[in-house]
Length: 244
Image 1 (cartoon, helix red, strand yellow):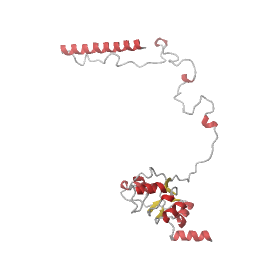
Image 2: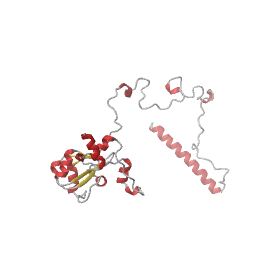
Image 3: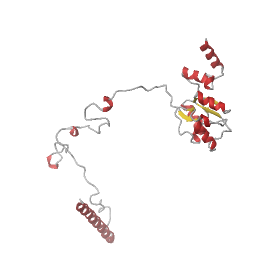
Image 4: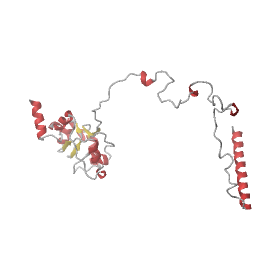
């Protein structure tokens, strides 16, 4: 293989030398013109015409051999799950569970991490902490459907803050208010989250809608959840109807 490679390199160098010498002689004689311009040797090759008789060596079966999967027309690259015709693994294994179309993917945030961000000066506790502040300070790295505040490390949390998130556990609410703070749970749809995180992309801030689903609306109307709809006339009427 090494000898073949060296011989090929020598052939290429010889061809290049011949072309270079021809060009130099043409330039020296001043006879180079459109009539003697040509591509370098081997730069252009004719395409292989298959199925045009046995004289070319590519007739009849056109280089595909006799029968088989690779000899069929229209047979491109198979799908990644194709296993030669047998039942693929993705169909042999049973299905489990289901995908909840109404489910929400909240980004979890624990109180010990929030306290650490406040102590290191990454979050200003003197103003209302929003989900945009959490993302900008890299306290959380993404927001899918919102942020849920959880109570891990609540024994270390001692800073009175006012924070606004999508959801919060009862234990986290108790820890925030026990430290002298205030928490509000507010609903955001995808457009509302985009306007919250990137207000510079909007000429006019869109109106934030209320939850469309009844159960979700009732959750934000419940004062125990510190929902932003708690205390409204609509929430009072809903709670009274539930008690009846």
